[in-house]
Length: 188
Image (cartoon, rainbow, N blue to C red; front, side):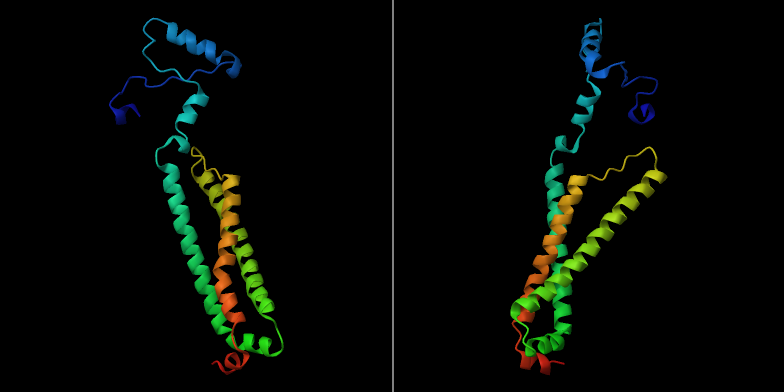
């Protein structure tokens, strides 16, 4: 690191470990700063240092993260919408048969939304499993790096994915339910 920063042969940081960190950190920090010539240096505890480099302290990081999440939600919504719309259009004849046999609008909407829910749940489970597998593989390949999967973010992602799937399938489901049985049976 010294070669990269032009400080070769010089120390840029010292780490000190105390026997009982919470108890002696303040005393040690004060002792270092009161040593002649050391008052100009910055002395911080490990907790203070780690909190200063967290994503919450990086300007614009959370805004950028929210923009990326928003774009992913919109793309996911459109993909699910297009997939379900195509599936409904391909099943127009079957929907016509169900409607001619007396299936209600709610029943048709329920069928499409249940199918979407099952597909969304399978996709969510596969996505989470792939994320944990990738994290484990990366940690095995790069043992000095830490690949953290934050569980609250996993739950947020599950919620966003499931709600996006249901909303993406709602219009195709309502369109399928509003089809006239005669037109649907004649559809090729």
